[in-house]
Length: 365
Image (cartoon, rainbow, N blue to C red; front, top):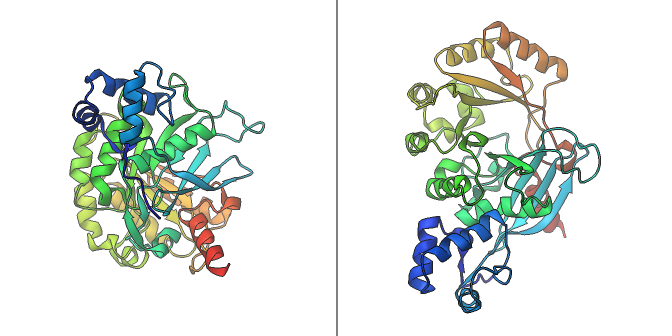
């Protein structure tokens, strides 16, 4: 698929947008702030609506640049209000993003319900975790800043969320397709754009970036203070980690935990440890003891996520009774463990599932 030769302004962090305005457009710097607000605060899709910019500058902009979002290839809404988008990028690649309601909507299109959006950072993933649909897709490429934030622009338009003083999308989690720290520059640019006070204006306290555990970039990310850190742990010992997360396990679990002990945290801030509970695999009494030893070393909380079964894997979800037993055993060891309800199971909302289903259907056509 051919891509446009025009500059996608959504790919430009603010300093780069200023340079474009001065050097390419030949306009004054203040035009950059006007453009920035139209793109990020008002979610504009074109230049015609930018009435505070002169007609001649709008015509120049149309010649040189565009505001390009991903297009919606598929959208599915769960009975619990979760909405999953399959988005097509300019080169035809497909990625996923999910809107997760804080509570079940009381009626269709209920805009009083606040949302958390889960965004992707790569097309596919190189980490090859054995339980993950995205890992089976392999890695294609990194996403640009505009493609990462384009997921938010599409979702905002879908729910008509253009009220920055009381936004419908309240929280952003980088927990979709891909490993964020392997696309560090574009992820950091997107985080700086997210928090810009004249744009999307998200507080860093409402943004979380999840990593499998990548040594390169973790300290730089931590020092930035741009978002909370979540670590996909999923295994409390190195042997099991090598089985479940073979590439992430290249950084030994002992070294990962030691790095997390030194991770910069603000007052009252904690690292989130994500733990996918897989029946009979990582939820046994010895795993409770091993988790207790890890958590005793860290200022952290443990999110328990019941496994959402993925076709082609040997793993099973725990029963509610098994999950409760595991949670209680962790609490007995003074571990702050919280069960996170798995949402959107009726719409293939687990990472990579919808794209995998789309690819399978296309192959069988």
